[in-house]
Image 1: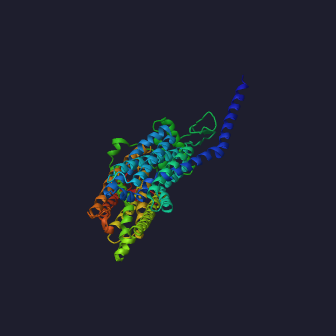
Image 2: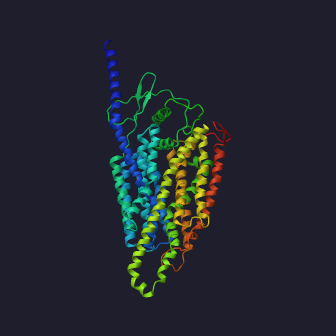
Image 3: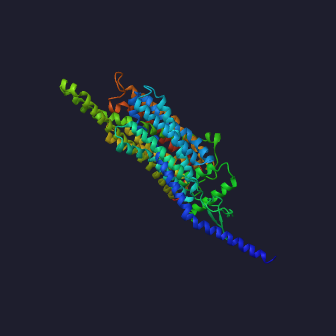
Length: 578
């Protein structure tokens, strides 16, 4: 009897060692390969999930086909934005409960029906003078894209740990920002002047990407190994490749934590929000092990806690927070003005191109009357098709500039904010990134508001890139600030409230652009076009410039409320503690 106990103990230790050894052997060859394949699938999905940003590559052509006013066209664009922002929280809950695959399938069906339907609407010019059907179809496109993107992002947030998680989700976000660039480039190369087939490409291509995502995207929880003085334990989030008895031995919690990077905060928000309904102790254990993985045993003594784990503000308590209201206001002003440019850069491009080439169009007036009559139909048909192709190519260039700026802005601002936090030694100082972001947004809008500045498609290219960069930079910084200020436990819910701001301001600013543009269209114009160049819409940018200038002032208020004046190398003067 006595001799059997040591034997059993030795057998148990050997079994435990064998299990750990097996897991370590299989993880690099199988689990890691599956995880990387899932990441590839999520990037593939995200490259199509941002196709709403490509609206300007086909919006003006849809307007011509249905004889819509600029205001009606903006209603169509706004409904697409609403589909993305309003459905996001709902898809988040859906994916948390049912996983990513069903959301991807639903998204694939919705996107195919949406863009396929718009292709038919464009081809047959139906319904005439009505924006109801295309607006509804664009709403479906926004919701379908939101479903796919949420599934792709959620899967990677739950599949990686430590700094790998931040990098993985950053890649998915970058793919989302580059979506419009990819499809506008395809439009330029494959379908110049052929809007109907381009819309079919959007539907079939996006749907195919989402269907491939069903096969590739999966949640593969990371196996987190917790070191203790005597042994190692396997975290509960272990993949199902090996059937083992899960063992957890929680090490004493560290009293000091460093501020996480902006990417890590965003990724952890996805993870924690999905675990809200689970075992709170398990969630906290996972979060503690996550912090240990990030630290790797090296703690900067001059860096203070980020506070995201010590704060939990949501619901009505969140709405009553002054800082939340100020951040919501900035989001309204920055996102609304950014969406105005994103949705209307196609109209702006066509207006400037036709205004610049108006003198060439007058050549036909010098032709002898009989020659003009003889060659009217065939020659003018060819010229019109060439003009349409050239305009659509220029629109693709502008959308590409916005898309690349959008993607790079999200990445650059995250890196800069992390460097700034490291440099100042306090996570509270991250709020300072709002100042350059709001200044960039104001600069982009002010360029359009200045007379005789953005008066051709070449100068428009720079302004489009700047506007896209400012838009992406803000949407790279604001979620991270939300997580740090109001906590990670309800991070997704809190950010979804902030993200309602573009629904309000996007409607206002886009409809404003439509009204201003329509007011400059001659009543006798057979096609709803303005021939005054930049004066057709410049007034709307005067208003958005004022709004973004106000956002700079609001940002300064937030900065001094949250951080005060930074003393480089650590510490602050004034400001609230996080």
